[in-house]
Amino acid sequence: MKRGLKNRHLQLISLGGVIGSGYFLGTGYILEKAGPAAIVSYLLGGAIVLCVMLCLAELAVAEPIAGSFVTYARKYINPTWACGVGWTYWVTWVSYVPSEMIAAGIIMNNFVPAVSQLWWAVLFCLLVTLVNLFQVDKFGESEFWLAIIKIVALMAFVVVGVLIILGLIGDQGYLGTTLLLGSGGFTPNGYWAIIVTMTIILVNFQGTEIIGLAAGECEKPEESIPLAVRNVTWRIIALYIIPISVLISILPWDKASLEESVFAVALSEYGLDKFAAFFSFVVLTAALSCTNSGLYGTSRALYSLSKIGMAPKKLSTLNRNGMPQNSVVVTIATCWLIILLCSFDTSDMAYTYLLSLSGFTGAIAWISICWSQYNFRKHCEARNSVERLRYKTPFFPFVTHFGIWAQVISIIIVASEPELRETIYLGAICLIIPMVIYKIEHGRWKRKKKKRIEQMKNN
Image (cartoon, rainbow, N blue to C red):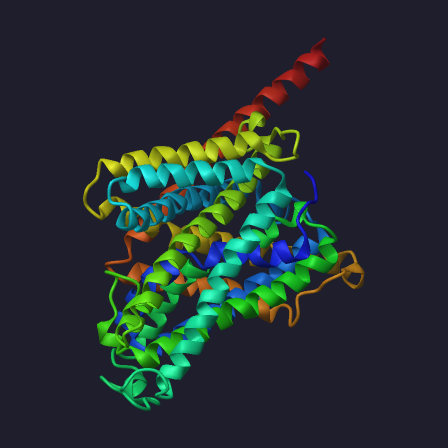
């Protein structure tokens, strides 16, 4: 595969996967559950992201290959586990990408009611398909500018929000911490709400691992990847913590909901209706950007599965631009199918199930990254080659253990919550079925190989 991604592309690709429409539309649920303490939830989630990314950086610099963490899991954990993780990751994104397309379709349907949201979703699906089939640098460039729009919008919101807090916008006067600590204080729903919402927030942070999937296509990975990991991690924390802190300071947490973007609601509260309308456009670009990044990441995971014999060989075929064309086409075709199925369901159940798949399966991918790095480092220590590593995860093994066990605890917490438990059931099925199929097929292949060897000996 061609190395056409520049450093600036790499740094913003993972942001595209993280700051999707779920951030702008779904933050209301987090605030509704945890209140102002959602800030702490985001900080805890950010700490886990940092640990995972530091582990991924060591692996990706040492072995910069496309579809990286699937290959790492196969090499440093177990081939059967790698198969389950790879296909689970693919299912995660082919489930999540349609939800982003549907969100984009809903937004455009509000602007142009004559065209149904389904047709808008199909149009956007076609658009990101074309982008992902072009040269990888074209994908990187499109994702760079889509991510810039989201970042600029969030920065503008912070500036306007601070002016509102200081009483320079609106007639409410100086707010300070009046709304932040009002309506029940900082933890109105208790400390347990912080832990529960933190596990949900990890779903929002999923997409940062795309840096590793892009490792095989970036220029100078030994320089780009560590820089991208450091910058992207801190930017994610800043782009979540600071805007949400400002948001809670200008909007009472008990007015937050899933019905519409809390950012738009907060701005409308102070008569900034045009700026609120602008955020509808931002949600649209966020959905397209997340779809773009997600399709890129999941097609590379499928390509990697094909390269290591865990998916049909034709999926590893590259087009003349060095892109895994068949993997992209199969992935996007599955997304189209899911969008079509969702069109027959007028309730919110299908949409909810699509999102519920992301939590458990994403956590499994992140645990695999940390687990692979732990085994990789132990392998290097056994060979006395640690000093030759161009990038080393700091504070090993504490960072690695925290990354693993914090997510294991998160899965246990999710399982203890009745309304979130379906995530575990659906995710476990997606993990186990590919592992069972691989185990059966691999056993069959080994028996055939053994039989051929015996025949050769007899001859």
